[in-house]
Image (cartoon, rainbow, N blue to C red):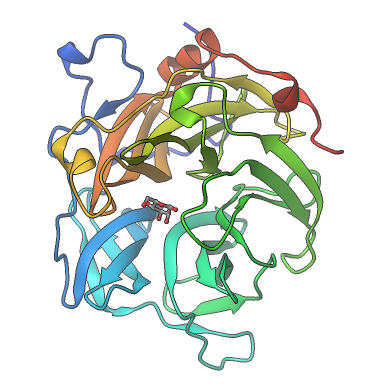
Amino acid sequence: MSTVTFIDKTSLPNIPWQEKPAQMGDAPVWKYTENPIIDRNPLKNVARIFNSAVVPYEGKFIGVFRGEQTNGVPYIYLGHSEDGIHWSFDEEKIHFVDENGNDFMPGYAYDPRLVKVEDNYYIIWCTDFYGAAIGMAKTKDFKKFVRIENPFIPFNRNAVLFPRKINGNFVLLSRPSDSGHTPFGDIFLSESPDLVYWGKHRHVMSRGYEWWESLKVGGGAAPIETSEGWLLFYHGVAGTCNGYVYSIGGAILDIDNPSIVKYRCENFLLTPTEWYEERGFVPNVCFPCATLEDADTGRIAIYYGAADSYVGLAFTKLDEVVDYIEDHSVVRDQDTEIGIK
Ligand code: BMA
């Protein structure tokens, strides 16, 4: 067993948790037996909630949720929970304002991530900026949401902010794309001193040689800082004759130079096997967007969208998942370079 630890020592005694069922054997990540935790028609005019992100907040939990409205357009809704499992949602969409206080509502908003860096919570989503691009906003209190100008030109998706500045800069993973159901995609990293000007772009990792991630990869949950490096849960996609299959993969990035992949698991950590993952609006999708961690126990709860229809929870322990990733790691030249050409 490794002696890996979280760098952030925050306790989260109320983290959602279920011990690994015996039949899961040596699987590194296991699914909550009561999944899905959010069912269809979760609130008025919203048909499905999935691909959503949560954080601990004031002793409870709060989250930003991709709600597919009954007109088919996705938007972001705020959710509240005492236990991280049972959620209630605000009926109104999150209301954004620009930096002058004027209304700013994007045409659509989907796949939100939610990351606290210093005093602010940042929401990062896929927005309409003459095509699919990265949208960003900040809040301190989950009452006022101030939109930040789009960091990148189109087309781009799956942006994930690191939870602290590295070498003095904010760091963002993203996945350049097209504006449709992109049949390619690698993860890149960019830095910014102020969330306005972005540069020092680096390649992090490409789609894998392994078939489960051979079409494209994209950042998932915000990287978790550990004594081994940044633990990244990401999605990897296989292209089949019946469409895309989305699984969850794991990698560990260098702490000071996170464009360097130290370990990359050749096996998926979690893949669609259950009815709520295999059957839905888009079948065969497990799409991670957030984690919770408890430093006292090493527990990690992973929130993932299932079949573009539901939210599921999965669990792992830090030492178990890091051991598994390291034991099954295959890194290639492109992974281990600094990522400049
Ligand atoms: C991706 C994104 C995700 C979605 C996935 C599967 O391109 O749009 O929101 O979960 O496709 O449909």
